[in-house]
Image (cartoon, rainbow over all chains, first blue to last red; front, side, top):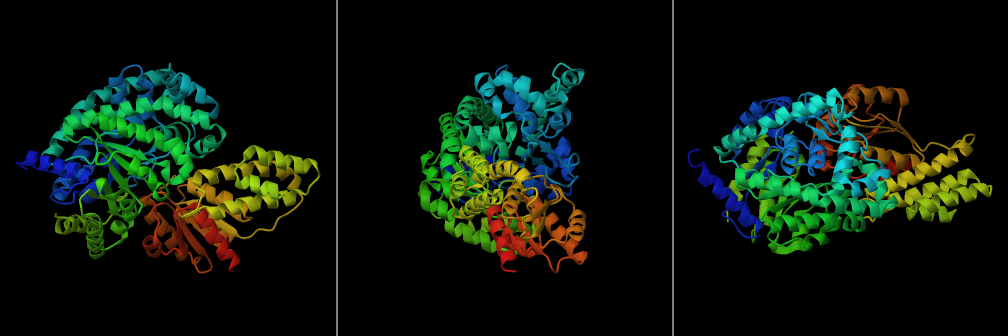
Length: 418
Length: 209
């Protein structure tokens, strides 16, 4: 596309207008999916994930053919623990380590042999999506004080050896050799990222997000403990959990800002992905005590620096809607999976931007006619007064039918104009 | 005994364990203590689900307390058999390695007195078929957190049908991405987004005959 910069600017502006709760020229589409584009291009999930040339090939084809206002080809998170452990040593090295899985694919998983990710063609079949599930806790319930009192050293000397099998004995040849190998891979990332972003931009690509800010409770649950044990900690040692959240919130926000700057400089997008995982499973009391305060702190910090938190409330948020109006109006995107957008709108009014509306099951099992009808309905409900971005459930459309995704895209063109 | 039930509902771990120990020391019947515990678990289950006041982290804590109670009671219960309410084969379907939803369902089903055969995670359709042949359950539960679990669920149900085992069997599917449309398409008898709803449906099936 010759005029790609013009189109990119129009997409950025459309999203920013919607984010501010106002009416753009048309309803924008913002979606995160790793594997639907692979399916669309006829490439295995394994190749999409591990082969950066294929990743670029698939990404550019998809970006060109669908031309959404925001598209993220999400990858993985397994290097975040190692990155966090290095944050006190050198923020730039730490960032590169985080980015090695978040933006650059499977090399860090293969080298570090982590206990978090199962990837296509490795732990799962070549056409099965990656999954991120901690095998077992890498921090014990007796170790909260260590995390609180000496976070970086504790992460490095105790957690990292448990989380990465290659680093289980940090002074062994395997560990030193693996870190050197990782270093060699890290050296390639800047040129890969430059190449990817450059080629994608030629297809007028704007990321739905290209930056990540985890929050403390989800970080402790998904990277250090596991969901079951963290649930028990909330009852057995509530003060320690809160103190640990307070200790790490700053490091996590730094990750958000640094990746946010990469995104801003390379793609023009100021959005920072803030995934929120455990909301579904917490009572309102527990959510407001252990989860939301730190999420809110991150959001205000990011907004103050000029970023737009893209808050992905995964699963269900129905029981927590009253928290939303504590977030800054017109400065955040509230993105929902299963929560009814009309109920959200009733609570927050027209000044907030909502994203969502398309259930995965519709794209997977529905027909183009049903998809078109549904898009028309969602748009008729959410389009008035602006502040709406059409989206799907987070990373939930790998198995969607191509004709349904096309129908969705065309229906937004047809019904989404202001 | 009502105190034990209430302390479980309040998720007061220390109090439950102290009460159980005191009752045993006082020579009370362990079966009655178990029944009081089950009643508490049942009440908690009733209060969870859509619009309820109990959430998954609470259910996990309740499951842990009940597990601890059972640990204390087990040696004393060894010679007393309790009747099984029904038999269920359950597993997370092929390709999906998430266990939390499945495990909490199992804890609550066991607390309700069901016999549960847990096939674990990433379970291929053939393994479900084998287990159904071997155990002859009334109900099969298929769990899966992700969208990618939908196709393997369908394949599992088809494989069960192919082995001519479907007709006397109820199949329930559970996971965040489940809805009526998915359930109809893959041929399940019921679907749930949360664990306690699943336990309620299974109880209803068994109690309704």
